[in-house]
Image 1 (tube, rainbow, N blue to C red):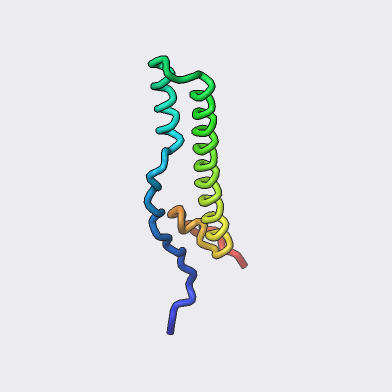
Image 2: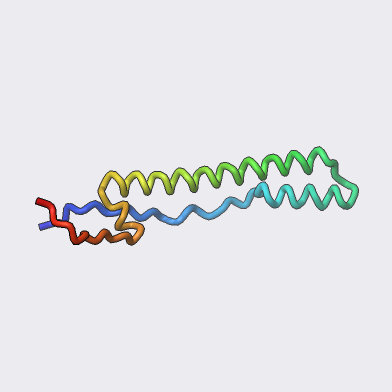
Length: 95
């Protein structure tokens, strides 16, 4: 008889990063240009704003993922099990 227990799905690894310029690399590049006198502070700040927005989006996605896992564990009754919590019965007898 097949098991009816819910199993958390496993997800494939993320696709490889594109070869485009990442926000961090763009910020580093603009910072170097500014330090060498060939760039402007406006472009540095613009790149820094883009980097901060990208990092904020990443953190929010990680939070949403953890909240979804917790909601799934709660809905299936496996929340305590996921965190290796075991409840022991007390010595009090219930009638």
